[in-house]
Image 1 (cartoon, rainbow, N blue to C red):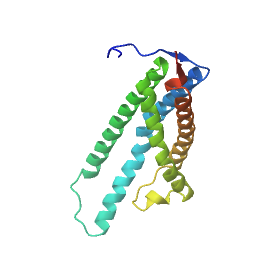
Image 2: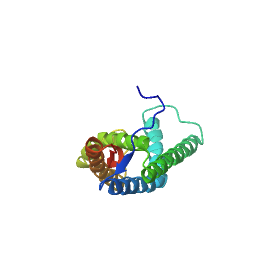
Image 3: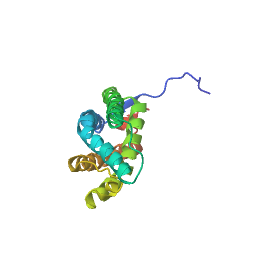
Image 4: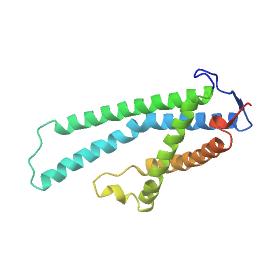
Length: 180
């Protein structure tokens, strides 16, 4: 019986290891830039959506909100966008570091993130095919360029997900084989 603290067999890089590291690092870097720009893209859209919502409520006979309500809501949403962007940036910085140092737990975390990104791809494709009318019913629609960027990232992330999954099954995390 092996002691509980016995060292695991070492892993040796293969021909797939370095390209996979570069691909994950590049994906995380591009995603970090995209995430960091979301508050700039969405601030105007969110302000417009809040104003439309208030106008819609007023036109249906609801009470007029207090003065400054729209400004307060817009400020809160902008702060939320910035906090979410900073949180996303932190995740992508950890993903880049994990790709550089080949942390196994980061490999699995990135694999899960890419898999979750695949879930939103069909919705984004349907939204693009309908001309953005899926969300327009609620009075909110993404700018067209953001929708197409999301689709592009979804396709690239899907391809990377498949590659990482194949590498994991065939060779192990970061496409590294165990040394006997």
